[in-house]
Image (cartoon, rainbow, N blue to C red; front, side, top):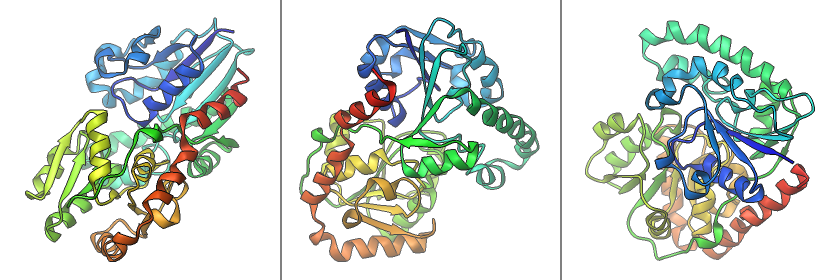
Length: 354
């Protein structure tokens, strides 16, 4: 059986790329197809595969601006020789064209946020006024294309109950839930030091803006791991208590999880791999109480709040600090075991029938 995996783009190593690595271990014969590829920014297991990128790849530095051309680029990828295609989707990867007899399974991290559930936020809050007139007709065209390409998929797999509901709302398709794999056995607890931690790409939907403002005003220390287009704006509103760590090694990230007081998730997460990594380290999660974090964190380790505002965040942090010494770290670590790569591989092998 010839197998291909279509992943939206390979320009960094985040949660979606960790899932791709696990799929590569399940399917050692699989070839990879992607819109954009930078071999220097991905792991060895991904570099070791045959990777085919689209004709847009020379412009990968500006990949966000090339969204209107992505449907054409995806449909130009040649997947005629493959018996099984797995699309790894939070961009438009499921839009690849296959033969009628090819089995196409989509592992969906989320339907594209900027076209569906977060489109009003992007249009009215996060896009400069001069761009809005261009964004609306382009988004309408892409939304129609994205909806139509759901018919090209034989089976959907969602990474959480949250995303399963989004798939139904966006495409009217059912999905089976298989949580993404997390290397839970390699995280450890350490006595907390005086800082909170946030981990993720610095983009608008992560909603770090109000968290940075509140932590700056309250005098509490916050360390932020990651980079992205929001960096400059966040930096201007931060004081000396906010430390921007940029990209860090896996070992350094594990150390930060182990030593932090708690992980902060101020935006709605699709699933929340960072939340699982925190609980595997025995650390609680202070989060906006929506989305995938409700799947990934047990109640005894979750301090949720209802609205993405400074006052709601303040109340959640203060609620955590009142019981910090009583957080059951061993119970949190045990709960994270259900997200191991072995469990992911078992579920996916059953679906893929390999």
